[in-house]
View 1 (cartoon, rainbow, N blue to C red):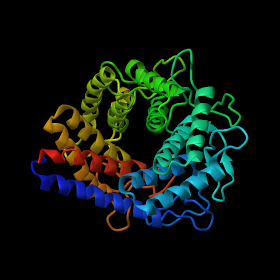
View 2: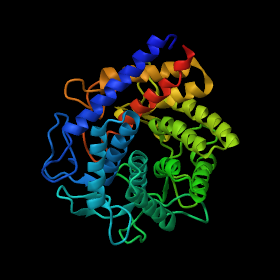
View 3: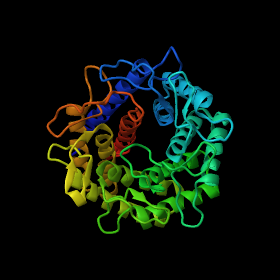
Length: 405
């Protein structure tokens, strides 16, 4: 527990140092000087995978991470990398014919998978909004608003609420709605709704439009009514178009991530009654997610109740979200047990997830502590977003307790 200013500074400085390390890795190892933009994939030894496709989500997350880092530090080097990401996204991922963003492009920047996954549009809005906050470049805001209008035009379910998952390039119905092979092929998902909410919240900070605010409020209502289980307070992952549950799997990382993102969204709207209600919900979700914690501070990946099967892998992004989520619960309640959980998660991350020799974070470790095989430092899903954001959130949140000393 932090009891002195020295304690607070020491913890805050640890996050500042790790933020610098993460961003230095991406600024040096991930730059693709041959084909432009960033490599689509790097091994754990930081070697590029020839011909690896480049994902829109990865590039949007790079844009967000470096824009946010600039907004925190005012380091122009970070803004330069953000600009590189913006140029690449605008040049290669934006569909000039039908709007939206391609799911992936080849290593050379040619369209690969042209489907319109709403998850990808959301993250592009997220990155563009943060970049606009940094630069006030109207073109970035205009592009963010164009993608926002695409989502509202094609994906919003005006009859039943929420958003449909994916479409063809031409915005027609598509058979395979999945983000990845592990996902259920369903029309509405927790994951996409969470990240549309995240994107809309960031856009609202720079463009406080009434209709956008209403959609944020509706998204929060979707979580309260459907996505957060009213008994267990875990998140339901998959639904059909009528919000009928199509999954029993518990994702501990998404639970703890949602606990603080929901509150962030409510606070952006400035509705005191809503904030109060979501604060209570956030704490209940955090308590539920703690079922995935281990004695060493790590958080397990998933649990499948019907098979009584625990997936005890420790993924990098889950540990990052645990740090922020439990600290958020501590801020809401003042209960030291939540603070202790956040610090324990950070301690585990420093010992087992961060690669102190070769940079960045490992994808994760198995239950026996061995490094998970088949994953690299950079990939379609391995990005600087979860870990850099955790560092920035903690730097900012720890700053707020300075006046206690």
